[in-house]
Image 1 (cartoon, rainbow, N blue to C red):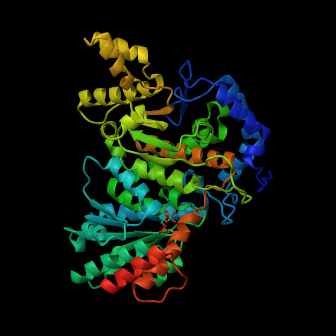
Image 2 (tube, helix red, strand yellow):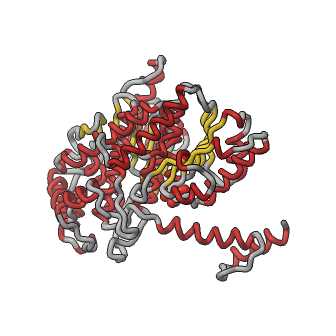
Image 3 (cartoon, rainbow, N blue to C red):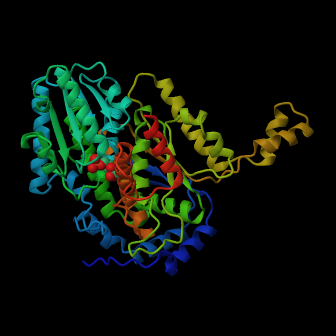
Length: 521
Ligand code: F6P
């Protein structure tokens, strides 16, 4: 199989123009229910612009964009991350029969958790990492540890001293394991926070605090020179993107907090979604259809953002998780050839769990001038004993979605006002404020219940969605040069705030604040 690294600019493709035309002709919501079942999830796309004609042009566009060959290259570990010359082989981490090195590290991580459990060691875990080395573990622990765990787990990510102070407060250092998760083992926030945790243990009289530290990294050399022994280091590889690293040993702290069976369940669910992505026909392929609906919303209908409303408090951290996955992957404006992409690409992703979201920003979603497509995520069955809560929660979710899809016309609003007892004149005035445009796009992703398998499938669904969108827009979803640039500037400014001369000139305002902070401190 040969996959070209050349990508023809999207808007020069006749297949793109035909797709755009088909979307513009299609109804705003499907007249009949449109649901795809994948990895145990039900993806309801009824609230998206779609038609038989759109379906045909999706197939044509994906053929010219080489979906089959590029998807195979991803799953077979070819260097699809072209700007860094690496594979993006996270799918390898969740296969039941991975390469020898992957199997070996998986076994070591499992064994570490098993030994810690059988010795009832580590009452407290302090997980130190940021971005992809943090969100996945937070998400899994929030999803499956909400009803209590025998270990306390704290997360320290931000360089803000309050984060590390709060993360360590009240813990007994003698019973604490510090987990330093960093792919590069160079991230300033993580290394600085790890130093603080070690000082905190030293201050409590622990002579060898490093004995209570493990590292998870793709740069074991750096962890070794930091002072750790080989047996304290769990490795992953440069072909695992930071935002995909929950599938690696980065999940150790999650295993300690909520159990290795949860981690295994996540991997099986993700694997089921990988198989679906690889084998399902385009029309019934959940990640592909989710991706194409997103592309229509962003690049044709001009929605600048995507809202995630998860109707499950356990999934509060799903929002930043997907935010990083989508925005770090798709926040690009040039294609693989370095040419400007002339349609808008990755949307801003934002959200909050429902129903809190309804009382915070849903007004804007319903009647604001822009609006945003919404991914509603919910569980059909509850895992608690308050059935009434769950019935009401689901009702809220379905009702919001219905309102976005169907809207309310002026005439309906007048009739509503009149039946509430208003005069016709008053009804006509008030009704103007009650119009809901409707036809605002949404998806509903329904899980039977929140199992590790279902969450794993859900995360892989979004990962593959992002891959397909990258492929259509023609960009590389696996690098993040924008974040890297910020890191370089931070390094320089940190030195200048400690008195070093400027290496390169700053803009006037940045220089003003550097000078002011230096002169007043
Ligand atoms: O935010 C940029 C980033 O490079 C992410 O991609 C990554 O998840 C995060 O920093 C942390 O990096 P590391 O795991 O190397 O500490």
